[in-house]
Each structure stands twice: as structure tokens, then as C-alpha cells.
Picture (tube, rainbow, N blue to C red):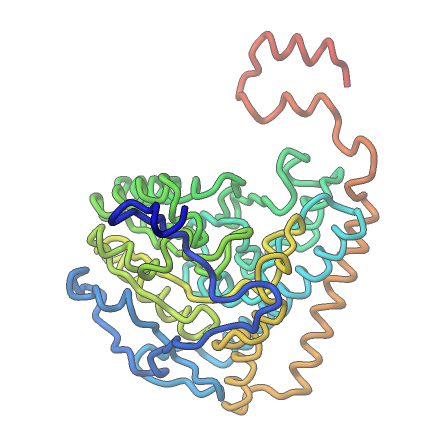
Length: 414
């Protein structure tokens, strides 16, 4: 339609577009962040109304030289920081091997958390060991930080005969009651109302445990997220709701879910929930805001919404090719750096770590994953025929198997 034929005041639909596409230079111009240490730390009983401005800033502790600054600097020992760094190194080594295993045909699917390791690891270390976690599919660091056996994670990925879930879940959709790790769902945002409901039940039964849940920026557009936010706010559920804003869903940038108009932390403002927005690549800042939100929840002061501002360094999954929708070197130019390198630099600045120790820790993580991989692959990989007995599909669904399923099982045989 040319200009002469357009109706006066014709409407024009707005389609959000990313700053750069494949072949373009990454564009982070115009972005500004508060300086590390500049954001005040409120008391845990601060009202949500008084905290609305926290939705539009960014809580930072580490500067880019590794110095910890300001009131959010957590009380955490160098020993604990070294432990967190080793968990992140192990998570990255695990990701690299499992991603490669998928490319070799040993499993059908894998999802990395490259660049996001600090979120799962720091948050797990800030929570109590018996707090309940309702993860999405990029929080494998929770299990690693709770020292769940790596070999069992691999058995699940390979769907082999020792898969704890007996081949009933897509690879990487782990589950562990002992580690307080609720079963991952492939459907987006289903874990958020489950986390809120669990937290409500914990409060109703006078328990002392809280819940935490994670979802991506794109998943905040799902109805389950908003229903959960309503229940969490109304009933002051002891839950931490974490939005991991890693800039990209599977092929659409975060503006499609509303991130172009405002922050994801601002979703909390409309629900009367304290909103915190944190540098997701800053281990110390992530740990500190999680501790704050956990203390608030344990004091019966209700939920907190945390937006983790980070970047997905790898593809969405092994089914995705990010080269088709974003510049190839965008991740390397992310202005908030790499979470592992930043915690390494902090420990070095304290005199509690060295380049030699870091190299050794990296090598140990790679070797542990390599040895564990060999152990798991001896049991079998996805291509191994019939690792599960067919009759097992009728088990673990009903406490008492109904007659018609018993009949089907008997007819099928083993």
C-alpha cells in the first residue's frame, strides 16, 4: 500500500526486533549499569512498594577487576568461594562433554548452561540443603552443587539400564527427591505454580523449608507464571521466583516476551512483590540476593522475584543453531563478562587462588567428567537396544495397578 492509499492515522503493528542479527556487529551501545557497590541493601522487612526502584537497576558486587564492593558483599569464606568456583568448573566440563556426546549420537538431546553457571551454583549454596528446588532445564548446577552423582546424571542422559528415571524422561530432565530437585518439565513455566503450591503447603504445615523456582525470560509470557505470581503474592508464600534473563529464547530475543518495554523484575511490582534485579554473572551478587530473599521468606514476609541479567553463551539446545538469529561473537562481547573468570579474578585478588590452581582445577574437572563418562558409557548409551524392560512402563504410576493395566502387561510379556 503506497502513502496515497493509506488511511489517515493508519495503525502499524509493532514487532520487537533485536539490536543485531547474524553478520552484524554485537550492539550493546546505550546500555548503562549501576557501578558495583552503588545499590543500597534494604532490610528484609522493607515493603514491596518502597522497593519498586530495585526492579530497574542492577545489583552488582564484583567490579571487572575482581574487587568486591558495597553493602551487598556477602559474608562468605574463601573456602566456600573456592568450592563454588570448582562446582562451576565441573558444571562447564560436564556440559561440554554431554554436548559432544549428543553430536556423537550417544544421546538424542542436550542443553548447556554456558555463561549461566553462577546462577544455579551460587543460589544453591545460599539456600539450605533441604529447601525445595523447582528448576527449569538449565539448572544442572543445582544437582552438581548438591553433589548428586555425576554418573547418575549421565545414566539419565543416555537413558541406559541404570537411568534413575527408567527412560521415561527426555534427556537432561532430571529428578531427585533426596536432593530436593523437582522433576523438570519440558512444558514452559509449569514448575512455577508447583513451587508456589509447595511453598504454601510448607507454610500451612508450619514447616521451616522454603521453595525456589527458575524460569527463562520467554517463559514469563506463559499464563502459569502469572497465576503463580498471584497466589504467591496473595498468600505470602515462602518462595523465591527466579527469572533467568539470558537475552534469548530458542530463536526469539527477550523483547518478544516484554523485555523491550521494561525489565522482567518489574513484573513483581504489579503483584506487590519485592523485585530484585541482579548481575547474573556476578557470583557474589547472586549469592547475596538469594540469601536476602531466603531470609525474607523464612521470616514469613513472603516471596521475592529475582531477575538474573545474564547471557546464554551456547545454543538453546542441541536442536538449535544460534548462528541463524544472532551475531556469532555476541556472547564473547557480553559486557558483564564470564562468571567463572570473574570469581577466579576475585579469589586471586584476595590471595586465595592462583592461575596455577585454576588450571589444575580445570584439568581435574575435565578428568573427573571424562572418567565418569567412561563409566556411564560402559552401561550403555541411547543407541543401545532395549535398555529398559517393556513391562516397566506399567510401574511407578499407580500404587495399586488397575486390572486393565495388569492385563495389558501380562499380554505383552516382559
